[in-house]
Length: 459
Image (tube, rainbow, N blue to C red; front, side, top):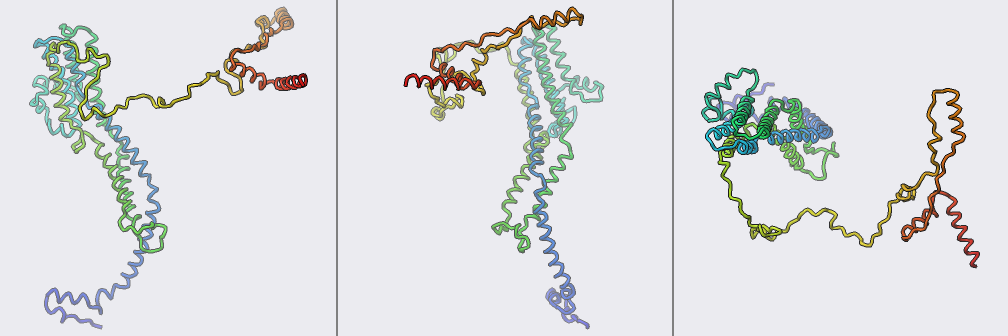
């Protein structure tokens, strides 16, 4: 049967072609409606099954353990890298104190040693920090910035080695310190050793930072954690769907929440936790929370040169302080902080008020015997030394004398411990308790027999 619609499309207007969409006979809707209905039913059924499957097995992913352990390792590395950034204050104070003199020669030595220390730090950061690399893109930029001069740059370039040359400024600084010692600007060798140690400690800090940049956390672990977090919430996107049918009643909560509030909170916490690891993974990068390495270099240069170049002979006069006549100094406070109480460390058990009428007694063992009596008790049988014979060579005479010694020797019997009446009531109670409830079964029987005999005599 022919379905004609030529008259409906006599012109190319939108209204004319729109009419054809609402025709049923010979239309697209009549051709595919049955297949579309079957597909929708199958889709609803399969979708609910997939959601139920994701909901059931989503908790099998150990997200908390994996993410927590990874973030802990990242934070530990970040903390160690921050502690090893390198600060020049201690070394500069040593140089200023040990290299004495205010002459031009002494000033140049101290300033060059401090500058070489900052040069070493700049060379290290230039290789591991994007910010410093952008600031000093070429070695010539270090010359223009004043960290190194042309002669020193030439010596640095002429040093032939396939490895990094971070140690070259350290060697220059140590050579200047040794030269200052030979010229008498350093008074003793112990000062030289102290400056060497501080300089090497500074170099060790920078080496630690460089090694952290060289060997990061394993890439596999980083990929696993980041992939796991995103996969977990992809599964949660299906598993936390609100199902309208009653086929999975156990997946529904008591409230018909069309907005997954708890899943959103979980997403914020877990993804935020992962973002912490991403931000701290490379603190020498270009993110907002990364270390201000350029500021640290500028600060070290300014502070170190100020420390070593300051006149060491200019110190305040030694005068009496304000608390000279005070036995216990009382510092002053501002009006806002004067009434704030202090909480000094006093000990957690100080507030406990024990009873004062306490009688001190000796400690008693588990068997009922006091420690003092057990330690003072003498052994009853003590074998004499004559009973123990030396081993002979196995001859007939030696064996005969050894046997006669065993037969004639007797064990020495020490006297039993004397039970004397004690003076204090506490020791009397201990004595009676030992006699009445001792290890020997005869003592309680004898005590009861004596008590019955006294009753019969008096009554």
